[in-house]
Each structure stands twice: as C-alpha cells, then as structure tokens.
Length: 639
Ligand code: 0RA
Image 1 (cartoon, rainbow, N blue to C red):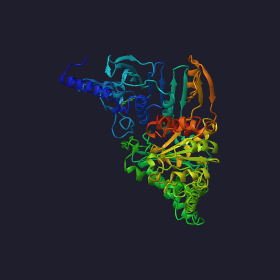
Image 2: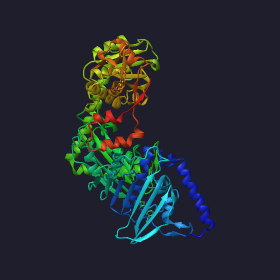
Image 3: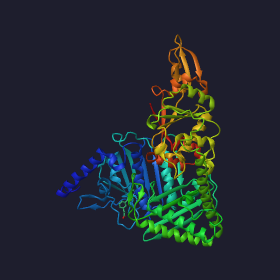
Image 4: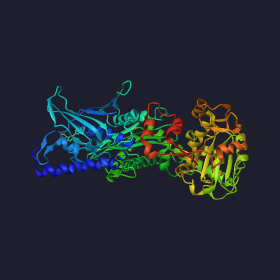
C-alpha cells in the first residue's frame, strides 16, 4: 500500500473534489444528464479505443450492451499503463480513471479524439458510473480493478493472462442518481459505430445487444469514405464514379470522397478526428473552395460556359446541386468551435485542404476528361436552372403573383394587418375551405384553400417550383417571396401559418409535401416558430342523456371512453374536414381558446445524431418519410 505522504493526501483530496464537481454538474462535462449525456459515456470510452487504433494498435473494437444496461467496450490497443507513479502515490491506471483530463498519452504527435471535443476523459465516465470495472491485458498479465462512483474500491489485482494480446476492457453502469434515463439506444450506438468504421478502414467494429434476444452486428469497410458515399447515395443515381483523394501532409491526414447524382440536393458530411463536424469548419471550406475553383477553371478552359446565355461563372450554389461528399481530416491538435463545438477551427487546414484538393482534382480532370465533362455539365446545368429560376421569378414578380399587393384570388384575407395577430389557414380542398371561411373569425383569420397537386419540391428545381400554382399562391399569401436571395422573412404577413388537412393518408401526404416545401424553401418560417399543424378531431360522441358533442382527437381517447361505464349514444367518425359544419370546425380546430395545434420545429442541434442515424440507417430515404418523421420535431403546444 501507499505511504501516506503529504503529496498523496493533497492529491487525494484534489481527486475527490474533481469527482464531486463532475457529479454535481455533469452537464458541464457531457452536455446533459439525459439521453445525450448517457450516450456520451460510451462515446468517450470508444474514442479512447479509436485513439489506440489511430496510433497503430488494435484493429477491433467491440461494444456490448448488457441486460442491465451496463456497457462493455473492448479493444486490442496497448492497454492502459498500470505502472506505479511514486510522485502521485498511485498507479497510472488510477490516474487515468480518477484525475480529470489525465489522458496521459498525448504527445502532440499522434492523433487523438479523446482530449478533443468529447475528450472529457475516462475519469468523467468513471465519476458518473454506479460502478466501473477495468481489465487490462498487458505484458502477459491481466490486471483488474473496480471503482464505485469514481472511487477505487479494490486494489489492482494481477493474474497471468491466457492470451498474448494486449488490450483494454472497460465495463460500466451509468449512475441512475445522475441520469434521467439509463436505457441505451442500440440504434444510436450502432449509427456512431458504423460511422467510425467508415472513417477508419482496417478497423472492425462490433456491436452486441444482450437485452432481449441477442443482436450482433459487425462493421468493417475496406473502401473507407468511398463506401460511405456509396451508402449515402444508395437510393440516388450517381452520374459518375466516386472521386476519392487522400494524403498525409505535415502530420495531417486529409481525405475527401464525392460524386454527383441526379438529385438537386446536397448531402455533405465532414469529420475531424472522427468527430462529425456538423457545423463544418476550415476543412470543409477548403474543400468547397477548391471544388468551385477547379470546376470553374475547367469549364472556362473547355468552353462549357459559352453556349449558356448570361453565364459568366459557376457559383458555389451551382456546385452544390446534386453533390454527395464526405470530407475527413485527422490532425494532432484539433480546435473545435461553434455553438455545439462541432466546427473545426484550425485555420491552417483551410489552405492545406484547398491546395490539396485543387491540385488533385485538376490532375484528375486532366487524366479523366470523360468524368470531368459529366461533373462540369451537371454544374453548368445547375447554373442554367439558377438563371431560369431568376427569370421565372422576375416574370412572376412582374405579373405580381408573388407580391403581397396582388393577393391570390382564392385567399379570404383577414382585416387585421398586424402579422403578429394574424393567422393564415392553408386548407386542403375547396369544401373544407368553404367551411373554414364560414367558421373563421374574419377579424384575424385568413383562409387559403389549396386546389390541385402540390409539387414535390424534393424532385424539382426552383424554376419548376415557381410554376406550381399551389406553391405560388402560398408564397404570394405569405408575402415573403422565394429563392435564396429573394426570400425575406421580415415581409411575412401572418405569424401563425397553420396547415389544416384531413386526418387521413391523403391529408398526411399533403402535410408532408407542404412541410417539405417549407423545409427547403422557407426554412425561416419554421425556425421563427411560425408554422403550425391544426389538429382536427377524429370523433364526435354524445353521452346518453346529453345533447352536447364531445370531440375526441385519437383512437386511444375513444377506447378509454368506451371502456369507462358511460354509455355513448352516438359516435361519429369525421373522415374529413369537409364533414364538419362551420361551427364545429371553429369549435374544435380554429378557436384559439379551445384548439390544440402542433408547432413545427427543427431540432437539428439536439437531434442531429438521430437524424444522422436515420439518414445512415439501412432503409435510407425515402426522404419523404425522413422529413415527416425526423427532420421536423413536432411538439405539442396548447394554444
Ligand atoms: C494512457 C496511455 C496509453 C494508453 C491508454 C491510456 C489507453 C486508454 C484506453 C481507454 C480504452 N482503451 C484504452 N487503451 C489505451 C499509452 C500506453 C503505452 O504507451 O503503452
């Protein structure tokens, strides 16, 4: 045992203070004490294992979720050192597991995830666990030690190891005194592990879920981020072979893979030291800069622009259309910035990336003129669309169709002029529109009945979108105009825009198409919190002996009432809004005193992981479903 020296005493107190600080304010270290923070723990341990892989040790990481929601992370790295530190009066292992920010292996030479964004250190995982057991295989021995709530409760025990392998096995049970939930999401852990496997060819990552019937999966992608691109574009049609470049310069590893597909949207993921940089950063900026420049240079040199009237150069916007790209860098000292600390800040990376991609792509185009022509043609096509959209917009604007001073004829406007007090109901179909017009409070409620198909904007470019009547009338009624440069949220005429559709499949489809439109072309309406979905009732019922209609909004509500003792005399199912008379529609769905509406919001920051996992999930796309279920987090608001 240790001698009770002064140093030992003071470090000991220091350490207990550290553990206490982490337990008192877990959010400071892992973001929150909810589901996100919970998964952060796994991430932290796995990051340490990846660091070993990146340093050249161990090609296999296995994560197991046990029946009781404890987790084991196993790697074949060097194993955490166990040697005794005289000065500190304890083992290296204990230091790594109890001292905040004591990774112990950072020498500025090797890449490291831990110590970066997520790198709060194993000591934080330990402090927030009811118990943690660590096994280390090293020097032909197996070392074990157990901790409870961050404090060692056993000495290190040593036994002869049965294998020659080295490695670390960390098992822990998150403390339910700390976390609001301690149930792990297999989906979420799997998505992250899969991502790690794409970013580290040569590494095999296994996930095993022992809860319920055992589920096992293993990921290993020899093609690295090229395989990632194939996966992302699984349901899209690529126009050419995936282009891939990689290099190591000044101890910085840079990789980029990309291709163009037939869609009009961009899908770009960037990573720094395996961390998904959702806010982008210098690596992505450098990549985009080079891509735009090289494509422009080639287009000019090979006379791709000449045939297009009014086209002087290709814009960054043009280059993005139909692009799927993954950019990954590994650097010794990453700096993470931004609101969610997911933006790479290292300024030197921008230039490094831009010149690397610039040179590599220039050479690639020279050597593969066929491919170059496909890429450049796609971008020129996007530019043509952009110019056409501008013309279409000018044309429509001249006709006044997008302007608020020429409101669409179908709109029954309100008399209120203050947008903050005005509501716009977008109503499916003419008959429901009629009911809504009669039922509304015309003082502050405007009704826009939609006729005809709403275009799926996912499959169309702005010029085509602008020729769709339904969309044109919505834009005109809102008063905001449309298009990247033209859209102006400050011109909005109603600060509540309410989609009101039938509670059936057709209604859901219409809702989705409208949501897609807002998501892609009027995002600020959602971000400002102006977009709502009306909730019309599904049933109207009467109790025996009463004339009053009680409105029910779900099948569960009906079931609950049917199972209670009360006798129902009439149950009416409303198949559509049109079946309700104007008074009923007002009472149930439009009257601000009584209605329940859903406010549409996009919780990208909080749920990006989940959205990412859906995008990455095996049944990729259909984007319709993605947007319906995931991109929009619809929360209930009683208004
Ligand atoms: C400190 C130093 C060294 C490795 C590690 C920690 C380490 C930590 C974890 C956590 C999970 N798996 C891990 N594997 C290794 C370097 C060891 C050396 O230089 O021999």
